[in-house]
Length: 228
Ligand code: ADP
Ligand code: MG
Image 1 (spheres, rainbow, N blue to C red):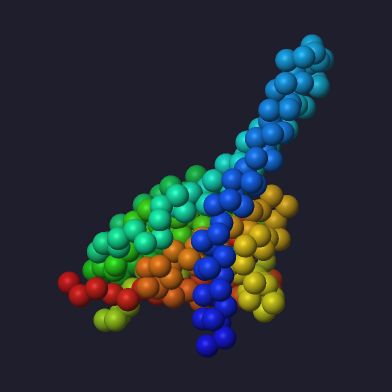
Image 2 (image 1 turned 90 degrees about the vertical axis):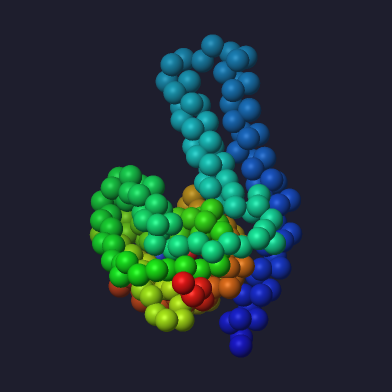
């Protein structure tokens, strides 16, 4: 009861979020503007110019991260849900995340029972939720490793299990997942899982986390299954 209450409160924070995010976007945009103006005003030596350009690129990346995590909120929460198949959506996300994994020496191990996996949802939002969890899994393994991605069906539900062998989390950290701005990363937004929790709940699903420091983390998503 305690956990579901907490999650509900977190979701209410989400609805007040657009203003906060546009505020956050102003920071990188302002600093990009500043550096471009600097370079227009004065003929800096090449090395200085390269340094400014790198700063600009970093700021663009920061803005991009923010947009990536938040994007789905451009869509209203009360958007109509439709019957969708989880398997093709999951395979699509695995495909688009592959370059990111490869660049970080992470190998995907994908298992699916190939059974019908129809749920009531929104494919774009489901993509966003899966991308955020898979990206965190990859980022939790700074020296590479394997990421297990499983699709499991039962008569009542469709489950997606995403297991990494990364840094893991303490109990306290697990409790804070989904809280806006909770991030242990130097360039993290702490918005990814907030968005993810909200999406999963909007689709009538549930999310649970098992983690052990130094061992890894397993995210389990469970959705009510639609009859064929
Ligand atoms: P961000 O990735 O921008 O930090 P998230 O909301 O996606 O924000 O994640 C919040 C925090 O939760 C991360 O900074 C990290 O500390 C922790 N976390 C999430 N997923 C994992 C994971 N698979 N392994 C270890 N820590 C994780
Ligand atoms: Mg993240």
